[in-house]
Length: 448
Image 1 (cartoon, rainbow, N blue to C red):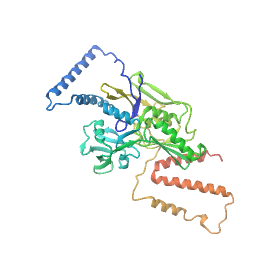
Image 2: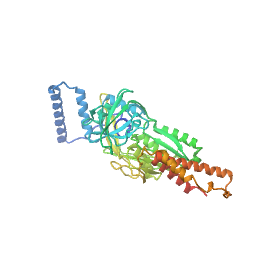
Image 3: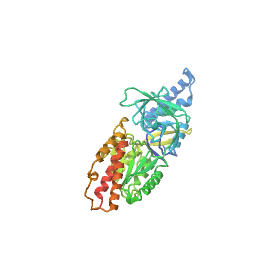
Image 4: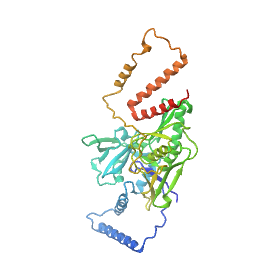
């Protein structure tokens, strides 16, 4: 049975592998148990017919049946659900990395919709939606009592149209409204850049495009740095990455590992038990790696983090991850719909499950809250004060006879890069911390 698995939270963004065949025969039940199941199915049929014939208004039979199936699935866990033909088609589009909407990954908590993470550069991100926000209303309609898919449907709509969501945020006294204009969400799964001597790879999701994007962006960044010998290490930024395709998480992990297990899945049925191993080859050429995570890093992100951490291939920095350690299989059903069913748990190479626990960083680094009142002006003033007076500014000083002019120029260039990196702390303290780790590792490992 060919199947694709997903390691992502359900919601506006979903990653999935597709089961193309139905499951085989069920394990035989005892006669008593079979009889009991048939009696319960008869009871369901009686209730269904009574609703159809006696409800105050004629109900839609298809919607009734879909609601019944979805209720059965959502009673199992927060990630199992039913998708009708439209939802299933939308999900398949989403895994391609382009879809319409607001650009947020959500889960359900206590009847409300909770933001796992906004996707970089999307309308939700630009509107200031944050990880941990609770959405209570969409266009003044409450989401309490709705399934997650129903709530997500309320947030979808024509591109260019407005949606107003009511948000409850930790630390903010009252709920507040946020107006967002729907747009086509094009997810660039990987973005690379160079910070000093460090290559930073920002991975926002695990879609069909992720691994190929990683290869492309890594090469471009290394070339921009002047070649691999000029790079002191790599930062893999998985913050607010909600997950996606399990196969892509495996490929990304394999990109930095040369051997050993990446992840294993263990389910109720033997066919759900699998182990995935690394193959020779390291895109980072053995250079040090730092992985950045936070509470919005979920599922496939945690697979990559756990694999690199267990193999001591990377130092993990940031805050504890989300803690979704289950795998969902998408199983097509009659009528062009599908059910998203939790079929296995996944385990890191050391055999640990991160379900409900998350991945703990090797070094916990919180992201300080940004005070808009304190801009770079104050930091610049401090920097000027620190460098205003030194030996170099005094008259009649002795010359430095230990360095050539070329060496002095190189020293000044190195200092400039270090000062530039220090400015990054004002914008992204966690990333600056990760880069400092790589700079320190390069310093202590450099040959005299």
